[in-house]
Structures are given as structure tokens and as C-alpha cells.
Length: 199
Image (cartoon, rainbow, N blue to C red; front, side):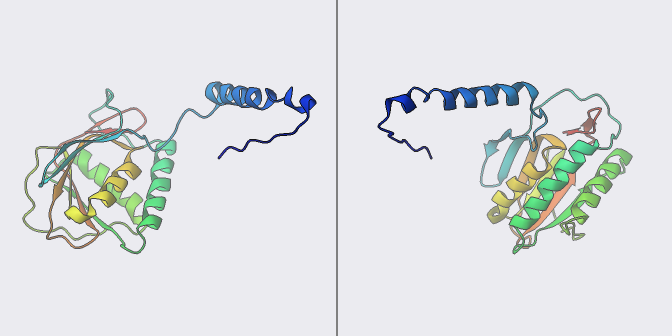
């Protein structure tokens, strides 16, 4: 909120240009010398939606460099953990439980599941309760949730966005318990040099 003041003194008004000039200089300094890495990546879009679920574009789609597992760099890990801490605090009453699944026997996916599991467990978000009869998905990364929990699922994806990018499917599975989320990986992801995962 901005306030205007009238001083009634002509000598004071001649210095009115100083404040905007200071702000402009500060913005230039922040732009050129400020911290460049900001998390989470704010690019989040629902690109498909129906009564059965959604497809989310999460983060910027960039070219990855490796098909082998790359652990997240410290800055990415720390940003993701901070986001998960805030997510857990926001949904403390709901107490979300996230089950991680990897289909097949891919060692790359198992390593990713183990990394995610450790990070979720740090905030008591991991839950080993896989349901039966999950519908199939054409996407490499799919989250199964109740339709009522879709907003919470969006916020979970935003929390993970420093580490995970790409097109992600959300499928509504209304037989799940309140706050229960199933995160399933069905295909190998690609990895950047600093451990960002691209699906």
C-alpha cells in the first residue's frame, strides 16, 4: 500500500524524486547481482482436464543429459526439502500419506523411488499402502488421488518441482482415503547433470 503526504513546503517537494531513484537502483542491483536460482519453478499448467483426471505441465521442459540415475545436487535437494516442509505444515490436519510405486524392475526407477522416499519420510509423508486396481496410464509419472484432493496434489507437485519436471498425469481414484496419494513411475526418466528428473 502506498501513501501520499503533503508537506506544504516547496523545499521538501524538490527531493521527491530521490525515493523512486533509490528503488530503481536497488532493482538494478538485484537483477544483475542477486541470487539466480529460485525454487520452486513457478511454471505449472493444467494442459488437459476431464472428469477422470488432469495432465499437468510441471516446470520448464529442457534437454536432459543422462538416462542413468543422477542424485539431486545439494541446492535442488535442499529446495525440495524446504518445499515439502511447507507442504506438510499446510496440510498438517489432513496428514497426507504418499505411496511410491515403480512398475517393472528398472534399477533407475528404484533409485529415484528410494531418493523420493527418503525425502518424504523426513517429514512423515511417506506411506506404504498401495491400493488394488489402479487404472493404467500412458504417462511415465502418474499420481492417483481422490478428486477432492486435487488441489493438495497440485501443491505436492509444486513442492517437488525443483527436482521433477515434465508432463505428469493425475488420475482420480475416489476409493482412496482422504489425503492418500499414489505416485507411480512406469517408465525411466532422464536426468540433468545436477539431478533434475525429466519425465
